[in-house]
View 1 (cartoon, rainbow, N blue to C red):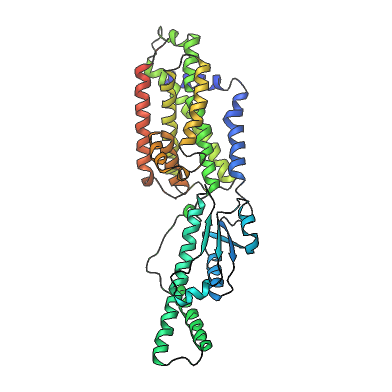
View 2 (cartoon, rainbow, N blue to C red; view 1 turned 60 degrees about the vertical axis):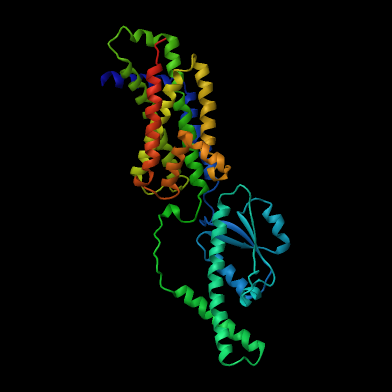
Length: 398
């Protein structure tokens, strides 16, 4: 154990022998996290999905639809004139554009099946799907009340015909108001319990915070291959042959030092996200710690394996950066996997970063705990075992 601690201390001193290492260990990760994640925090505290609404209908039903969207916990409607809709939507600041056409309220009141809304979703925007679902929920609630009011008119008309069309419309309006009140005050048959992280739909700031952590921790852990190549070139590994130090002890010390530094780096990035950027990193400390540890373990194991295929330190360093960025991108660390084509979404599950991002997203964005990430954690542990096995099998002192 004393040898392992000595090697851990040696590796830490070698890594931070140059002050430039702090640039990649701390400064750049915090800077990129702030730029990509911090740009999405602050404001008025309303993190609902912004949706443009162009109401071209002056009916009570159209007004009620807008009111329901305003009360939604998912979307934040912004009323604009129809003439400004296209220009405002082209700014790419909103997830969707909803047009309420003239005659919508009348069509709903009459039960016309062709009463439609015009919803345009922003391309490559994962929040647009959540916005669509929220709008469909509001329309469904409105349609339910309108159907009840329409049926009440038919029943009343069957008993005593209305004297005028105005009387019929007034009866419908009264029935609609009563139906809407009944829908709102109806007892809940199902109680839905959501973690705080799951309320409000997709959280872009949290996704970017997780993605930047994964990227900036993965690259130096893959860079473990550079340390192995450096010590081979310097003859350090050859000198180990004349000492009672076993290969397993040397590799364990190298892995422990790199993994320990990675855990420190990840802790700093998480605390920065929580206390500076106000990013919700979930409610399960145990689940988060488990996923971060297994991600670090799989990554450093990948670095050990990579070190057995590279011959020089410069070769290992270049390959670590290229592989780290590629794995982060394809694993969904930079952009959500939902934006990828369906075939690509399936194919990238061969990568450890995909499982790491999936597990961390379950904790941070979906409020899962240890039980919810057992599958992802098991897969990462399997990757670590595979990479370590190949690395030890191919390990050479020269």
